[in-house]
Image 1: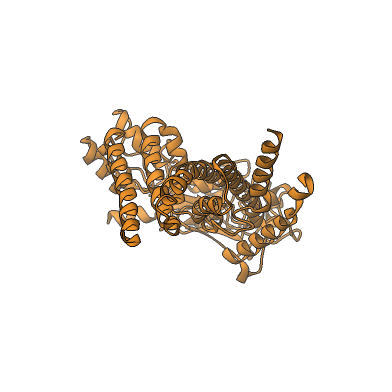
Image 2: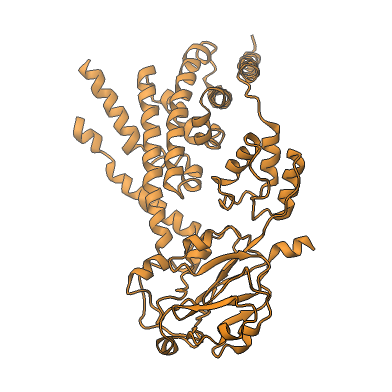
Length: 200
Length: 274
């Protein structure tokens, strides 16, 4: 029992800090740059990503092991996962609209945006590649979502400071944003090895 | 069996299941959408300025649908065009919209006044105001960091020669700039006004004279010469009562410093109406 808890904690911390999907694996850069202008929007997007990542993993893990492996067609994983995730998010949106209009309004445009997000697809595929069991996959994907939220919130803070800064004319706007994103990503490399250090 | 065939069948099968699921869901969980709501929402400009008194265009459209007593002419940026369309949709009598336009009560640009210090802090009026009332000599006037320009949804405000200028043709009268200005220099007036006092300084004439050549010195010449009694000087500053003003321009002719401006302030709405 303790062993399992420990391994799950390692997976969670690894996917939040060390293998942060945005800042270490560079997946999901599009919403990272697009929606990080304001803190509340960034947090909303992050929450939606956690939700969708967990949901997508819960749906794709059984499909991989009970369907694709049965027919010996693991090579179709990418296409099948895209299909399933897209349909799933649409379904969730329809249900949310009916039963939780407030949540639907706040998640709003983010849900369909996430449908084709590479971070979500990346999480589901990496879970399979790493050979995780169902529980481990769920923990890993929730961790990845938390890592995304962390990156978004951190970067929203950085960007609000950028608004007040006065960079050279040629760096204004996107260039300085990309430069600061790179520096934030660099700082996350400091986490490499930290989880092994704690639990190893 | 051919592996390609199996793969095709399996993927098609998953696709079909997903499709059926979505179709069923959209039937069972369908939310009846109010058609008038989306129609009204389309008529509104989407500036989300809040001039109507509701939380954004969505809020106003919703209020119009649900409450019949809500007036259809509250959208200032949309003007008569929006009001007309909304009235048609709701089947109510068309009411004219009182279009508004923003004006700035300061013309102390680099030629009229100068700085008392070099300010190198955060580039915003709100911040500069905290530092001994800003870098300019006059602590009532425009600081020119463009807090108003930043919030303008139309990009109608530009900073030129140290002060903000409003392009009245672009201005939609939403009033966001008036809220953003820490000096409260911006006033939202009806889109027919032509006379403007371009000063906000309430100090005595001598002091004003030393700071800005465009400043109102409170000499009361405008007050005496106004045939309608529309202009009064309180706290050493001329103020126009727009309900009485007839745009005759007598005040401007008699102003010794030339801080009263008579010109066509009206903007966009006028051109649209014509």
